[in-house]
Image (cartoon, rainbow, N blue to C red; front, side, top):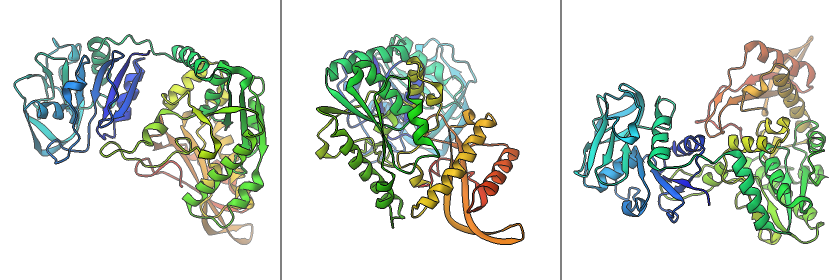
Length: 509
């Protein structure tokens, strides 16, 4: 069994970032809500307590049994986690006279302590808290300070319990990764052997044991997640994996044919299903985003169910669920709020009677790509931008028609193809076009036009949890705008979306 670090989530916006930083050290970790702590067995090498928007002084503030968490495992409290440790041991946590947010520098660092080995005096850290530890309890000793925060870091005098008031996981803390390495590797003793190759080997073995000679059906999308999941399952059970790729009429231009062609030579058993008309019929008259999502999801399940019934004795449904899907779909009082439900988490109708197998549910998106490279999957598939399950259905604002799909497919094709031709595609996380329910006045030749407006969106990101709009060259955007207006009948205006996530989302619906 894999050794791991547990990260207990108290609701911090940075909790997933802690996990990502630990994974970068080739150490496996899991995030769990503070009020749903799993068994802390011998595989748990250490526990990290996250930050939180709450105050330990609030009634009903998130709390844990520190003795249970520390039983045999070192503990590191980060921000709220550190305040909670101090508070529970009898120290004082008070509201700061002013909110401590932003860059600070360590003015005192005791490098004799393992956590702070090789951490430099004056090293920049990132503060984000409204409370501060005003008095440490007798059991804790001070090991680092800033000019305004005396208790910037501490250690329990007798136990392996540590606390830091700043956030080591953000890039603004210049030596944050060194601090996490000191904790995870030197204090917890993790071996740093969790690599893509090891993941592939262990996952295939687990899938062989889990699935045996059972048949699995899996819905392919042509994207990274479903492709990597399919290859993992295929390497475990071979021809017993049956893949289905459904054309819902909301794919990109030529995508149905292109995706099927991309799977040739990979050894997968893939069936393409043209179900465009069923989807278009179900979407007539629908303009509200959630109603469209539900209609698209329902028809997909109906089509998928029909096709899976043509395969005898299917026992399992394979899915490309990844770790952010799992985390965001857990809703508990306190930890990070659920912003949206995911179509591939817990959405299986009872009547399908299939067990679910999700080989990627422990991985972040960039880790899935690294696993895909370990499996030697074509870079054209691994490098594809994310594409939503409802496809262009959530990029056509308002009611969906065949003509609107045609327009958006052409616009999207020009934009994406342009990014590739100008060597910009690999520089952005995701790029897309949106057809707006807006018409504007224009002039073409000597004629006045009143036609559609399209928005282009391109973002940079690591995992899609946060994103900044891409600073694409003006010359490129001008060229693409001219191409779209000249070549796509029905469009006379192009705009570029310069909002970031948060507060905006990447998709418009």
